[in-house]
Length: 217
Ligand code: DX5
Ligand code: ZN
Image 1 (cartoon, rainbow, N blue to C red):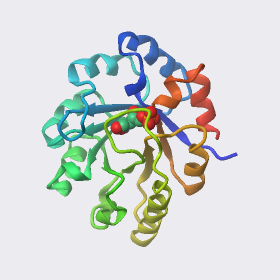
Image 2: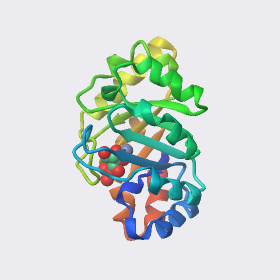
Image 3: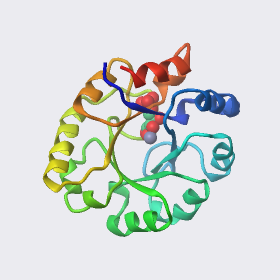
Image 4: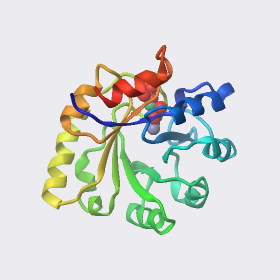
């Protein structure tokens, strides 16, 4: 039995009952709380923004893992920091000056993660991976919860391990999209550190038990 860390994604929570769902996560074995910010431009959906997250952050006892699916994420570094964020993830595809953005995130006192869409190869990280605290591989096209896992992600995890070996870089590897009890064992076997799970957790009859099971799959 392998173990892996789990970051439940609030995107699949009941937004009319966020306090209840946050208390469930606080009480669970979840390692981080994953927060998906969408702008309707970078991705074809809108989720929640800072007025909501300000309150969410106050209730959460878990480290915040903020995933920005927006254009110009560099404009919001201070807002993300003010939430008390531990890990700020920006998309490679959204950053023209990725090196600068990564340094700005670190200068703001947060860990820096870079996210890759399913069609973006791991090789684009060659010259930045040494600066990264985390690489987040999307295993669905970003924008929605409850989508089907893209199997090519397993190959990309292997590519990422090869790049890490070659460069000596040791970022955390996080996977986001379509993670459930069917896909998680393959991800753990491929060597990931952190699983994001939205639908699998919140559609489960017992979400807290599902978090436990994903951590021990
Ligand atoms: C999708 C988001 C995910 C989403 C995952 O764009 O980045 O974090 O909540 O949802 P599931 O686990 O349902 O695929
Ligand atoms: Zn996400």
